[in-house]
Amino acid sequence: RSTLFPYTTLFRSSYGMNLDLGCNKGLQLGLENCADSLDGVQIGAFNQCGNGDGVQIGIFNYCAEECRQFGLVNVNQRSRLQMLVTTGNHDLISLALRIRNRHTYNVIGFGVGRKGWDDHSCGSAYYRIGQYFTILPRLILSGDIGIADVGVMRKGTDAPNMFSLEARMNVEYEVHPKASLFATAGYTSTRYVSDGKLFKNKPLFELGVALF
Image (cartoon, rainbow, N blue to C red; front, side, top):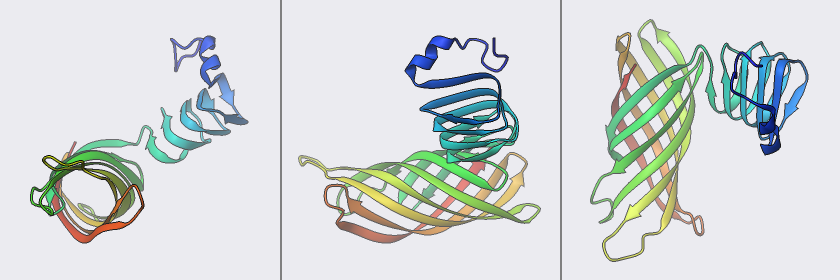
């Protein structure tokens, strides 16, 4: 029985899961890949391992220790999970989870837009990926790109589906080991999902706090 996954049973392999209860030194290719130890490569939508210095490539990667990870969401023993609270000219209020690793980070969150944006309200769910650099002991410079699914709300009419492509530069200052303040400047391009036509381009400015 696996020490990393004590309740895993082999019947799960019938649902597209590759399970290795020992050390995987080769290639695991599937929808979901699990190994107690990884010295090889995992390629799949969801990858998890206990230890080792292998490579994970997928949408969501989890390693109980630390390995080389390439994916939309990467979590390992060095990951720092933080809550972001933001306000700005694009979203009135935004809440997000930031997963910060050694040099990179992922942000997953949602925001509520400002009323009066072309006479209608909006909300969004978004994902961003970025890289950061520690300039001074408490000063961090970062940049990220992302995409948002924008929901527009109008009274009495059918609202179109939109998406937004966004780029940001951030300056962050740590005021406490578990709290920091940041300012953001960037640019967003919002388009209609149906035909890709441009709805609006605009600069964005944000202020926020990162906790934990």
